[in-house]
Length: 278
Ligand code: ADP
Image 1: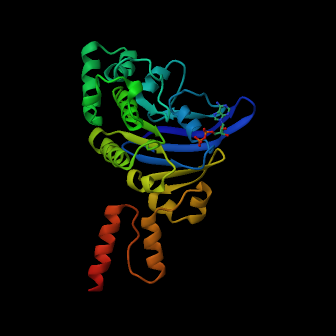
Image 2: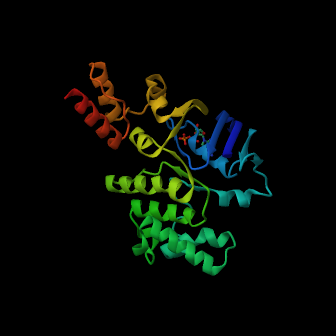
Image 3: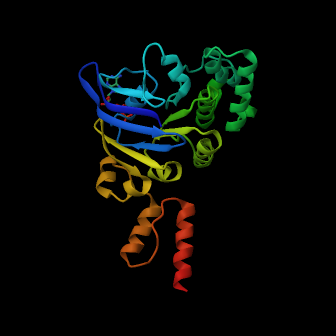
């Protein structure tokens, strides 16, 4: 069953800006999906259609195996699909991190005990129990990002959408995020959809990739399939990460080694190639 699907989704902003054109997208359960493409490709606009923030100019957005988003179910849809935008919502309105994270669940109309429980869970999951009394405004970029993710997770969505989740994070912050996000499908049955400008993040955090350019999906496939198409990657104007680049170059020099995209897979491939050689 498709948790989330768009069919022929087209969006024109006021001023005749065509931001999406005939986008077909599907996400199943427990999927890890990356959306890549240059600035202005339409990624954020697509995300805003995933939970009814925007309405299609034409085409449709379906959730839970075929249900269209309507004015009647849009509140339900927002529980089901949680989106963390790059610049977190409602900057600085609430005095503490704890209250900030509770904002979403309270708006869902949950009782106090359930809200408290969900806030605890979210603080724990993100490893930010120590921040609960802090003023959101005074947090570092990485801390703010975690609080924003915690606020969405506390609404227990089935689909978590992250718009450029590593923007503004330092390398340990990125590593933490990757570890954390990768637990969500297996441990919580969630589907994660994210956009990024970093292809190494795609390798670490996605199974399936959509490539967008000028409002259209110009290609999609598994990480291996997409990385094997340099002409497609060139449209994203992103650099091929060092690991597949190095392995491809070794293969071109007749070294018998399997392609790999992540650090762990590359290590395995190198060790196997080395063992075969001895
Ligand atoms: P991306 O997230 O891939 O950078 P966006 O979805 O933000 O792309 O933008 C797609 C296109 O829509 C761009 O041409 C952008 O200028 C335009 N756009 C985005 N938001 C608006 C808006 N609120 N009004 C008019 N045009 C917009």
